[in-house]
Amino acid sequence: MSQEIDAIYDNGVLRPLVPLALPQQARVKLTVEEESLEESGDKLARQKAALQSLWQEIDQLPRHENKDGWSVRRHDELLYGKR
Image 1 (cartoon, rainbow, N blue to C red):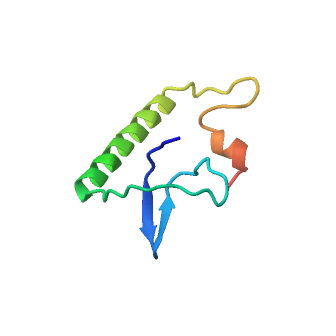
Image 2 (cartoon, rainbow, N blue to C red; image 1 turned 45 degrees about the horizontal axis):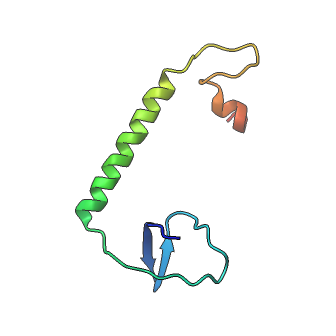
């Protein structure tokens, strides 16, 4: 199986940014390519744009109370309690 993952090099250890579907002590072969600041910034810009799009879609959800008490406006309150 082959997969491409992003990782951070920290104190001599490569730390994946996402969980890997590998058994413990699995041996792997790595090819290391350093990501340029430009590539990193471009990826960040794409992620920000995706989040902005998601928030816009969420804002379009109904804001009225349903009979079950769930609404976009009360989402956090219903999940985490009143602050």
